[in-house]
Length: 378
Image (cartoon, rainbow, N blue to C red; front, top):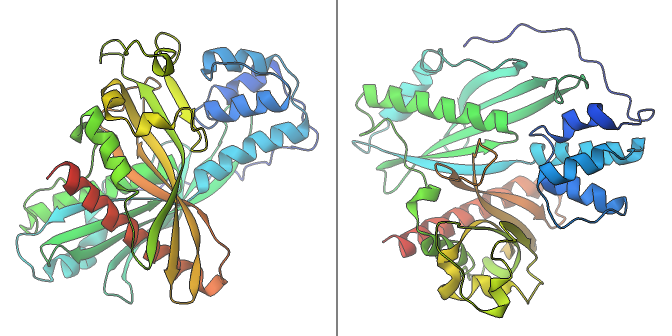
């Protein structure tokens, strides 16, 4: 695989002495690295409250303020934490037969399969993609990317993001389940590229029926079906893993769905609110998830939920975020985005148990996801 040549080691930005404002700060705030919510939260910390979360409104306000070194450091650290958290998505390839050829073929031809994949500017491999077989007999692809100039033009920074793809046989032996773990937008793009290359390879060998994997897309649902799909994820109730409560959720008004009903508790959105983030404790707005008559008027794009688990001696709670991700534009067009989830919070566990518990939670959520999709789209 082609890699980028190593550049001059990046200089670290001096957080302790920098006081930023104006154009220098605007470059960072308008980049994709800092979210609208992080800007709004920083404004609140400075005593500035504004109803809009749009960057066109919030960036000029924050750029006109002085950020102390501590405030700036907190803002950047939030973006690093958001980017580097491990997130998960999966898709499936349909096998033409239930044999083991798919394992040996990719193990023997991995380098040539991904040979044409190129990295973007200011990206290089900290560790090249490697392929192996894990203790369970699954095929594991792992790598790490070094991203240079994290905030381009004025902060010289480098960050290393790991990525993984796990291939395992499922579906009564007739599917390859592709579990993809990412820690940034860059590893997400590379996971897609590697998965696409593997799909082309398998199709050329007659191992799969199509080079395109099957995923759950935003466009697979109507507005109402999408909300019912999310809510079905909360119906999990087994001795080992069960739903506890809904946390936050995010909705976007569907401007093509017609006028909202003339009812006091929802008409306040008309003409004033496009995107809204709602806390699960806000009982005044939680009805938006429970009354089907309103479902057609908005997109549900993100939801967090808390589950309790008991895997042997390991017990506790975990917070899971479900969302449609992969949107490249700044508008509200989520067409083409895929469903995935991430474990955002986990009860304190012994260090040696964390990985096994995470694997068990992923398996439970994956089963809940598949059941929810079959329930909504039988």
